[in-house]
Image (tube, rainbow, N blue to C red; front, side, top):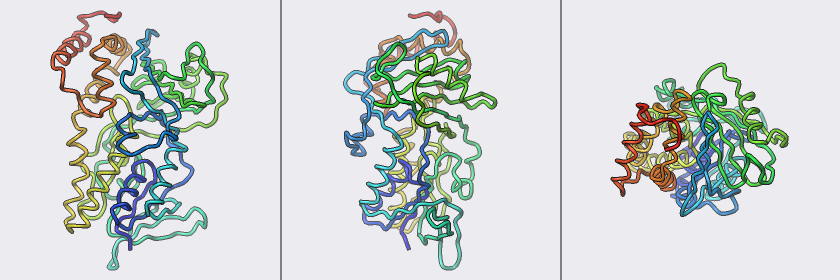
Length: 392
């Protein structure tokens, strides 16, 4: 009988498993093995610090972000007082799983089937990858960290069907040296309806490789064709393709993360990917940590209400950022005309500084009220068309 069984071994599930194991709980996690989520791989300094990530996992250190408009105008934003770290999910996720196992979590490889409950208690049923046999793990509590469109959420926590999604697709390629259109120390974010009519495309260096991809929530968009065009525009069409991946990305946290009994959700399963940016690794790991905290509190107190702590702790710190990013996506991603205005706004130094301070530290920066006021006025001017779509 485990204290907690975690379904999913990505950054969220592995973080929850490690935290619970280190706190002395008996914990197991089930990982599907071999699945690599499509992801740009960007991680902020706060993640590296909060989750003790070694330098060996950082495959590139980005010092510039380039924002590209539909008309191909661009803004280069220097990353001052730090860098954006890049990880390769193929190796990063496995590092987290191995670390959780070494901390004392039992690791199983297979596919989740269902949760059974009877007079003897709660059991997680899964199909073992090696044998193909159906197996069961008895447990007191369950953390569903099985990603977007979570099977645990569908079965246990109503509301997941209401979450908006984009479908992300990317290709990992062998990265060239610096060339026209590509810089191994720069992340490119492309706001162009020809690439994505409602989200964005990206070119993110990973050292010896690079992630090139895009996302969209609109049916009928040819993701592979858009990515091929993005590669051609960046001068990367001749680079060897290492692998291709696609998956849904949720863009709004669920209103409820637990079933009021013995299940709590974490990471993508709970919808905690940042709107506008689609950033998920940091928030997934935070989601795993607060789910572990809630599970530990429930085990200690015997109160199932303590499972609600996961969402409360997460939203207390990150609700403001999610609200602002959601408003920005709703305002600027609607059309190419709006995207042009957004890129114009990014020329402003105050916008650049406040954006990256918020990204690096994962909280809204309130230290410069005059800068916020200035940005608010310019934002309104751009949305109303008072200023032109050219650089200001």
